[in-house]
Image (cartoon, rainbow, N blue to C red; front, side):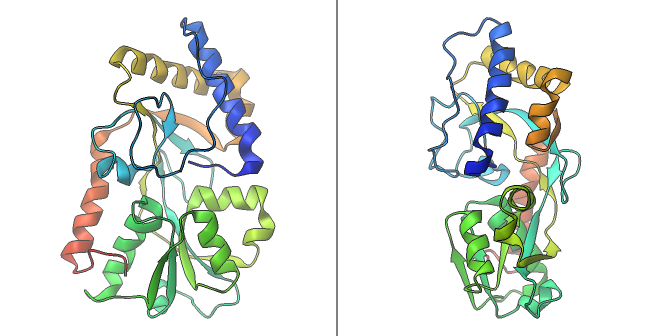
Length: 261
């Protein structure tokens, strides 16, 4: 999920390290590299997906019953806790907005209506302010966090909800793209984006994938690979934590704000 072209070698090194752990278990014919061409929010998790990372909200909606969760990452970045993350509401540094309430009547960017950080988390944040009525002048679906960042930075749109890890990776690799932006607010927290495999992966194979992932985190020799992606460790997924994301959806609806608008 966290990928810029500048991060290709870091993500490739992560897969190489995980594949090396899997080969210790006798796995053969592993993919030689990650696929970087797939859409970040595809229509479904296809049966050939061996290892991927998928936003927690669509796992409860459009991907329900299509996956097995393997591990929850903890990242070393602002906005992240133990197995958690959030979204940042970004505005231009020279904008007049000082708090979320000030965005009433503004134009807002989200990456996808299926996104947890782009839609679900800010929906709850603004549901608490909207009084059951539309809050923004317009909400524009941009197709990607990178597009949202660009359209706010250019002044075309006023604000966006951006995954906190996406924002920090832009700061790491494309600081010029976010130098004109600032964080106005944080959304409610969420369980971090988990690593998953397709539901068609057998339970035994999924268990081996999970064990290899945890060995990767524990091996000192792999630590530089993890640090390049700001990864600290992994934890066992708790399905109830991700079900809480549907509670956020219900809370927003109960406040009369079922859609980010």
